[in-house]
Image 1 (cartoon, rainbow, N blue to C red):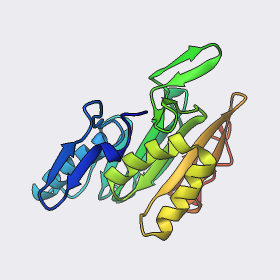
Image 2 (image 1 turned 45 degrees about the vertical axis):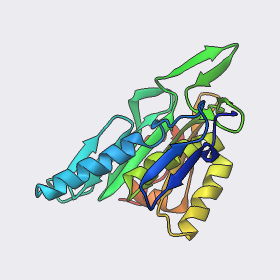
Image 3 (image 1 turned 45 degrees about the horizontal axis):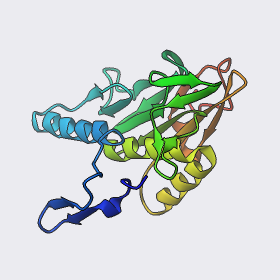
Image 4 (image 1 turned 180 degrees about the vertical axis):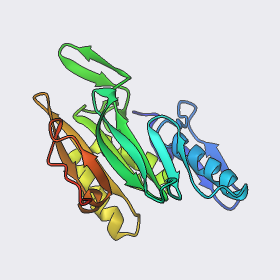
Amino acid sequence: RKASGAGHFRIDTAADSVTRLSADAGIDEGAWGKGHALELAHRVLKKAGVQSAVLDLGGQVLAFGSDTAEQPWRVPVAHPRDRQRTVAELGLTSLSVATSGNSERSREVAGRRIGHILDPRTGEPAPDFGSVTVVAPSALVADTLSTAFFVLGPEKGLALSASLRKEGVANEVLFLVERGGALDAVSSPGLAGLVLSADPRAVAGLTSQHP
């Protein structure tokens, strides 16, 4: 915890430089690296004249243009405990979707699920409620917010999502909360408009505005 926080670095935007002020501090790209890489890849494809594609880096997708039927790209949302099990599909056009959870990197310790996403306020793994999926025009924003919202949890995460939208940061969020083996969907108001399908046997409260 002593080595965590932006105060351990001095950022000089004019000189495009970063100075580390504490020898114990470091910068980990886990919360935003995929999003940044997706945006760089998107720029390369656009420069090459590609008008539609889906880029998938595992856990995060960037979809631009439309599919061969001129429809939004269908992007699956996995069950928080089983990445191979799809519980919903989102329709994306020039949007990125990022999911944070512990389906592949967790351990059971004394009846408690220990994950890899750390809460910088405590130095411990963030409580594992399920998963969070963020949709945003910016892949970097989606990636960063999915991690932050997971650390905050559904209630505070939804509040921050709403606050950011008021500030002009476009984002929608879906929390899949595990309750006794079932999943409850908790989401921002605009998320339903992106849902193409949802498995009612797996997720309660997730509806689609599409016919």
